[in-house]
Length: 116
Length: 137
Length: 246
Image 1 (cartoon, one colour):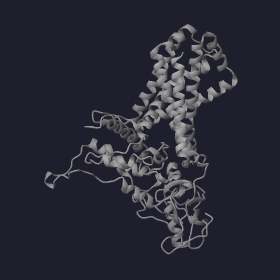
Image 2 (spheres, rainbow over the protein chains, first blue to last red):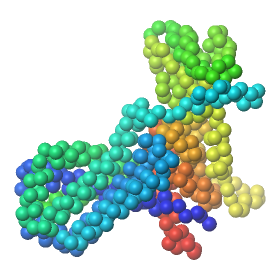
Image 3 (cartoon, helix red, strand yellow):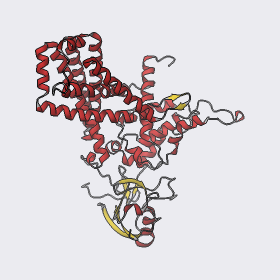
């Protein structure tokens, strides 16, 4: 029987997060980090934005996108630290730190999105 | 290596050069690779930024306005511009490399790689247009 | 374009001293000479103590891989004239222990290659009376690219992951496993999955892509690995959620 490794599962999450991040983050940053604050485009009025965010589908989509992106970031960072800094002997600590960080971020995302 | 060398008739001392800590600076392609991997940090920042935005929206109109003002301050702008550059780099490399993993067969033949990449870009344009429309339209 | 060029060759002679050193040789540079011709000139006329591997001199045996001006190359397939005035630095293949001069120990790769079972694995061989196994051009197309590997190990020399963690099974081994996994005659995917799903199997790869860049036979090991990551991850998920009859 195949020994159970977490790697395939983590890689699938990483890939999904990579796709989610690549598709969604650029436009969000362009709008909310540049266009609206700098006045290039009129910022959406509060009522409309609030209603949009409050919608359960939006919150679910945001949660999934954030969670996947965080796992993606944690996974990639883990391998970068492992390889880039040649600290393989700290493998367990790095893995716990990176995936743990992603988990903490995911919980924070859930909290924010549930209480908005 | 430091030890006195040890030579036997059947097994000479092998040379095992250790990889430098700065191995990733030694080739342009390695630097590009590490830059691509480091983009993950900026992905995490973008998620944090998005969650701060959502929280501000939840706290009321004034908080939302203040968030936009804060986002326009020089330091935050700088961080976000750098993040955007790295995230676009991530997106482009991701879409271009997707055909390596995603081999699609249609009617017994493999689809050419550029079609897979092109459909990724198309999805990107569609998703961006959808979000922009939801916010602005 | 001058008619002579300098080769700066890395030397390591453990019976004479434990430190490697560089020795320069001035060799002729006719237009059709490759690095290997230069090395053979050195060995024949200038310095018979220089040691290196080569065989077919036409890019099919995979013996003559070395690091030329920092790049992994087949010395029989790299022209001296590409390097202009020179000098040309010739060093042993990276990421392998150096036995002597330009000769590296390839035992690690050989052991890993055997572990991935690079042969047709079948539960039942068809009897000879049934004739040959037939394949359509499409079925051949599935794995043909990966069968072009000549085991030259330039990909291992280029792979930073292998350099950092020699336990990593490496590009060529995975590409060759894929060559058989994707062969319609083979039934051994499950057996290979066990070896390849370890952390130092395919999951050690972070898709740097250097292996594909340096491959002289356009095998695209990076593509083979990423493709296998997806198929094996999905297969593992399927077996996890639907173990019976999966």
